[in-house]
Length: 472
Image 1 (spheres, rainbow, N blue to C red):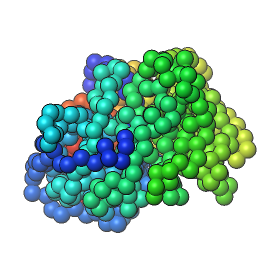
Image 2 (image 1 turned 30 degrees about the vertical axis):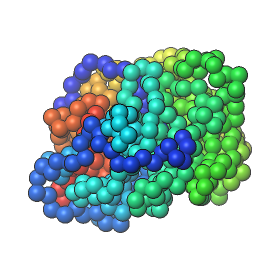
Image 3 (image 1 turned 180 degrees about the vertical axis):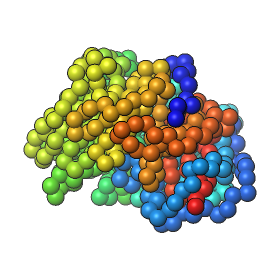
Image 4 (image 1 turned 135 degrees about the horizontal axis):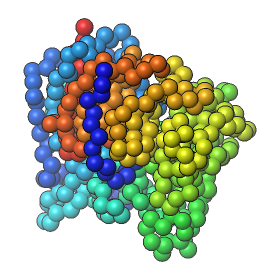
């Protein structure tokens, strides 16, 4: 079946958020509506005991928990609700049947005047009824004119919810009502020279800690112009852990600046290790000690190149990729020293296995499925054998996409709001269904879809859609 996705005009890159008193503000009227639009009489959702508590789900792999659920992809999912949202690029998280979404809006303040604020709202996933909404002042100017809103995804442990703003504000709130527990201005505390698109990572909650990439610089670098990352040096805060209860620093480590990738865990032997694909390198960190175990350099030799995908883990193998010059690398890792199993030839796009931009590929039975390419129309969806880096096939859509695995199928979302349901097959591109929601959400649609129970969340520039997936 020929793909229905068309080659469209190239758009610019983006991957791939205070004090305690300043973070909590009274409810205010914002320019983005609070009321979702119900579009159909949808039966109650089949949720089950499943959550999507952080970026790419519980296991950092973009795989939905749908065991025993038989979806009928021959029928187009119905829109259960359509939620207006403000600035930002990420989706939210789902915990206990609630959807939590962070965005930025310009708000009319009780004291008069209008101010940009970062907002966090909690909704009932079934009907998008608003449960609570909180906000904090936001001061951020993007160097390239992108939206002033969160790039990443909130994370929750079931009791607290943590957001990491584009201005480096790390806030921990009570999950039940949004009450602020603590906040840390990481940009100010660690001397961060502004990255091209601000802070784009999502927090990791691990062992009563909140772990985030910070990438600060020493005092003498604070007068360097934003974005001139070639002139600043790191100050040992590539990765910082904060106490989840108090917000106090637990440890910091790593001599590197921040990227747009998010930290994740993996197990090496019997040890839990945190992986961070930072600006210049992949770091493995012992979270119990806050100690860097090893590093592997991997970044294009270009000032404005970025690393954004999350490392893909398969046993003791780790896959990383970028889209500017050097492509991909597969490592075999241990606690002492990693070994490169294969590495793409640099500066040879046609010979490179995969060039990941902001989208993380999905691993299925030893094969990676994901988007390769920096912009349209030099991007494609492809299948790559993990062990060898051999490209099994690539399609001709010329379109950037994100992907989520749902049971035995992949949900492939292009940045214009069109969806293909793909059966993983290393022999050929096998499309089983196609849906077009570009009349409901507008570009950019960059966040990978979230699937909980029989509900799918997709996000465009100004709306989040909740789709009810038909079941057999």
